[in-house]
Amino acid sequence: MGVEDVFSSRLRMKILKILAQVGELNVSEIARRLGVNYNMTSRHLKVLEDEGVIKHKVFGRICLYRFNENSPKAKAVQNLIEVWEHANE
Image 1 (cartoon, rainbow, N blue to C red):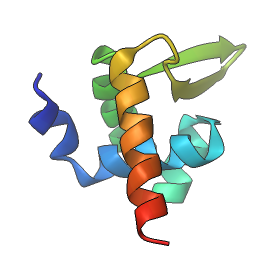
Image 2: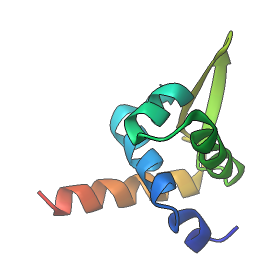
Image 3: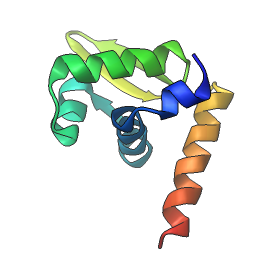
Image 4: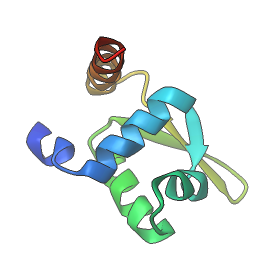
């Protein structure tokens, strides 16, 4: 999948922005903040995880998502979000 495919989704960009701001959240909380259902959120999280931008860890039945700090893609996305947000202040 190319960068244009990842960035072409408004929901994926919102997920990345939320994770950049908060750090780590579970699927239900991400879905709640987006105002969309759990399944749709899970699908978008899977795309981002398959690309290596985010990763998850499991605590019992809770699955927490965060940026993959070992990924150059994740660092680039975080940097983009930070620069974009600060430029608009």
